[in-house]
Length: 350
Ligand SMILES: Nc1ncnc2c1ncn2[C@@H]1O[C@H](COP(=O)(O)OP(=O)(O)OP(=O)(O)O)[C@@H](O)[C@H]1O
Ligand SMILES: [Mg+2]
Image (cartoon, rainbow, N blue to C red; front, side, top):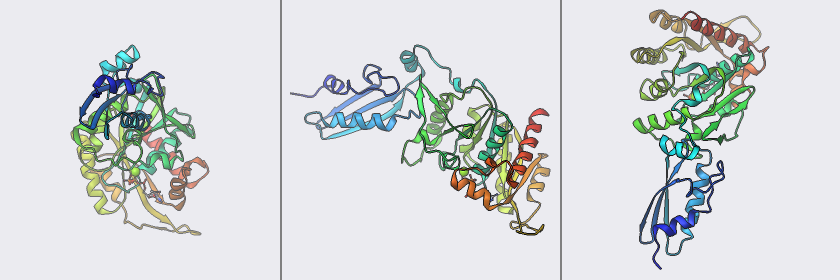
């Protein structure tokens, strides 16, 4: 008996979307069935980008296909529903940026190059704002190095509800990572238009709820990656993180220029790894040189929001998933308090 499209659909009927509890065939998620001898390729459209059940659905579909008589090879292609298709499933069409509606301010943290402490600043700034009583969230938009969940000490995966992704919550801070978008173990090699589209959909579908501040850890660099995100969400201000070496400062220059060209407001600069306190004395050592942050700030007429020392407690906090600012009495907490205050001032003076 020849295998037909109908028979393939029949074999997939029992598979349910775990969030909606309905069959994926009934929901219209199977968008294409291609048969070629012993091979079959099925396209599954998920209800949202970054669907937490992506891997599970893909695996179930694949194994149901391989159970079909005469099938030796099965490929499952995953796409995302269009907004019209979503509207059919959910009975309404959530607007593109629905999840952001109650977010008052978006603070993006950027850096010209990697490894300067962008994620460390994002996490501790978010923790500090939360400690000050603001409703705060943190978005890990650095798909190439999604470190935020680790630094916040959570391995949980977000769940979906009503076509929206529900952020996790840790230490009173809501948290979402674009790692969710890529899926487990998927190397992130997306570029250009594909990333734009995926990020846009993803950002719109995170149910942040009411937030005073959403801190966004942008991808590093002076190219498309940070711009994609910052042109998708309405940013109140970008904080640019740098270290004092000259090489780092050149990248910062380019990074600030890029944001300015694209009308993304830059709030100020944070100099990280500025100095080392010599234990047991008042002396400090300027390991990477000095004055770099000040120079850049002056050149671009931007405030220097703060200088963070090299401090083993900061690294440990990140490694252990217990940000150093969790301890409100720590040295670092005082510095991040100052940075947060200085940043808040830049918003008021606008
Ligand atoms: N002020 C500091 N004192 C000590 N260690 C620090 C400090 N700032 C950052 N680090 C450590 O340096 C490493 C790099 O920091 P982080 O991951 O925040 O940088 P990043 O700019 O986000 O890097 P990437 O480009 O890889 O995302 C981490 O191990 C972090 O704990
Ligand atoms: Mg990082």
